[in-house]
Amino acid sequence: MKNVGWSRLLVVVAVVLGMVGVVVPGAVAAPVPISAASDPTAEEQEALRQVAGAIWTPDLAAGWNMNTDVADVLSTATGEILRCSEAFALVPRPPGFLPGIVYLVTYALRLRDYFLVVRDSRTYRACVVTAAANYRTAIELASMGI
Image (cartoon, rainbow, N blue to C red; front, side):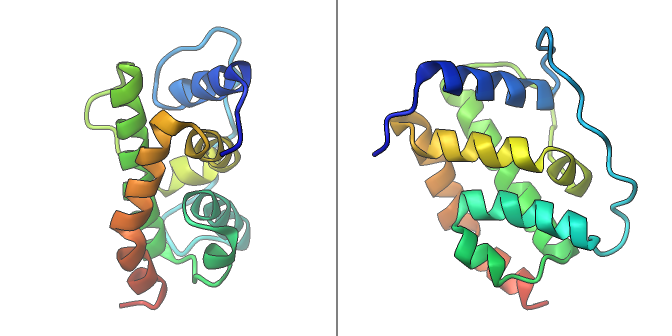
């Protein structure tokens, strides 16, 4: 496994903490996407694909139809990873937090970077691997419209 520097891990964790509502001094807010009510736009689909590729693999994500059902499954898997990571880090977060499509699209690159870093950390790897295994079938079915 690749050794990830603690400073990079801490920076990524600080960014993610900002995403779940913990105020991080000096953090910059990301722009909010225009709409998430209908099927994702091409740009939103690419953002979702980035997050999915970090959880599973870019090759798998490239073959999926990034529709609203896939976004819902991806949202649930992302929430599980963040809750799992939080449990390891013992960091408080807002109650009832479930990332939706707007959240996923807004923070796609940050989430991707976070998942790639925690996937290489022995402690946090379990969070990403477990979510990937638990939601693989659901995301495949959602991609097929089933």
